[in-house]
Amino acid sequence: MSRSVRKTKIFGITTALSEKQDKRLWNRKFRKVCKTLIRLEKEAPVNINSVTNIWSGAKDGRRYYRNATKKDMRK
Image (tube, rainbow, N blue to C red; front, side, top):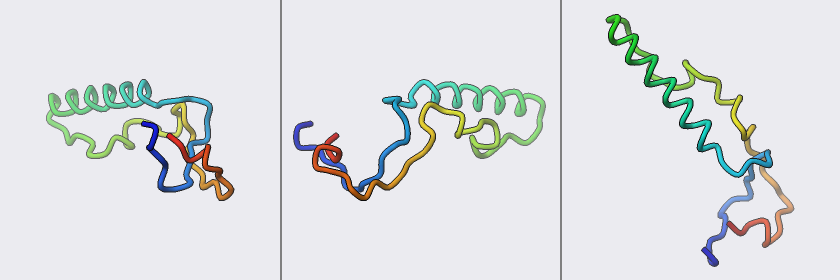
């Protein structure tokens, strides 16, 4: 990964390294809700956002950082 470089100057607003655990929990909850609604013969949600709040994760969002240095742009 020594030559991997970001193409855009967009960074996450957080100190967390990953949202992997949050995404696992959100998808488990989504699948569970879908299965129960299908079992009850009701219409299942199409989008994960209708079941969970994506803004409650470890990473709050992303921002464009205009003055990013070469060190910031490394992965």
